[in-house]
Length: 209
View 1 (cartoon, one colour):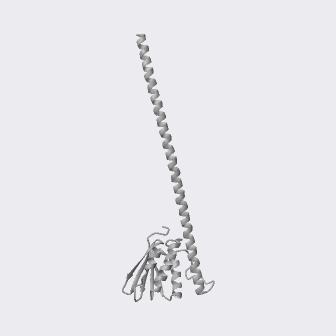
View 2: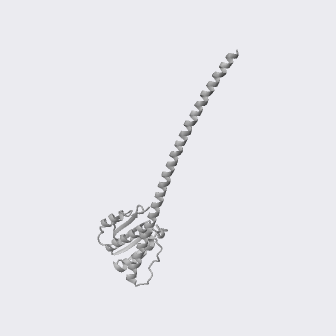
View 3: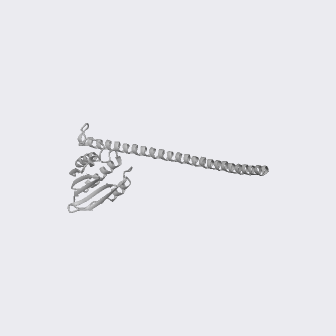
């Protein structure tokens, strides 16, 4: 009887040893998997941080580029107006970097240089639309110049887009301008009307939005 109990104890001890070894082995395996997963997570986080940093850097560069284009556009407007009105004469519309400001000043310059009279209507809050987006400011100025050269008179509306309703004898061909503004993130649509034509400069995205 004593021998039987001893043998049973030895068998149980051996079984417990096997189970303990298996548990230890499983623990080590799980530990290795956990360490591998943590390493992969850390690598993924590092890649994500790097990508976010690159995006932020790109956004900062884009913002800086837009400010530079706006500054260049302001210099152009002030120079052209100064040549027309004389040094030290304030702009017709005080500069605030908005689309409405640039269009108002450009129309006054056009009136003096091209000779095309115009009226301006700003719908809603569009006067302050896309502040600091120099590309849109520059594209709008070029669009108005091209439309003015083909017009006897213009009525300009700013409502997200820049729209010219003009009186003239023939509808102008603005294909070259359309190709140019497309590279800046916009498109030009020209439609014949009873009085002349309607031309719209629509911003699909900022050359930067």
